Length: 292
Image (cartoon, rainbow, N blue to C red; front, side, top):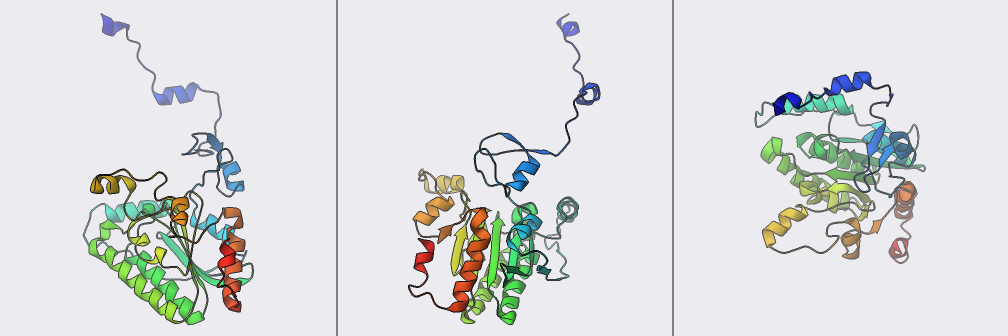
């Protein structure tokens, strides 16, 4: 019979046991843009940028702090806030526990004070590895607390955004964070303090519709996707094709939504220069030449 002629396939475990090739697990990463398999340490040493095509990989909070904040100056805000489960979803607490173990993070944002080339700032950094940087009650509270501390300490505020939007596992509570963070930023503005918003890939939904788009100065990394709803949803809603490059940082710069696209290698110096300019209050032309 034909069935008798079909050779039984070896299981993956059997193949692994027979293989003499020693390939370290977790040492390689595939670039989503060019498809090349790249050694992780090479990517890390290149500021988490693909050495083949220049694609920007997303960054863990710890790695971002290493890049931006002067060594030994970061002081985390010790906030003991527990993530709740307002909708009583059975899997939500389990997922949170799993992500905490996997990422080493308590939530999708970390905040504190630190120095950038000697300039002290309040900084909040979001992480896509924790529920895609979604904004629930704890994220909203930490962002709001950072804004209030900036007002109290009279320091510039910098927020790195990366998010899929509001965290739907927390229902209306997550949407309320949009209003809360926006109201806090109004007080920051009234205090005459600087807020720099840095948009990274991707920044979407309720985060874009609130604090991410309210910066006095809005910067973005090259190629970052930024918007409210995704392109596919928009096309299905309006029944029309979108322009090429729609929602990329480059498209938004051309249309005036952001002020400047900054490469990672220049980001730390750019932020410190902006903070120094604001401190001196000596723009002359309003600081416009800085972005030319």
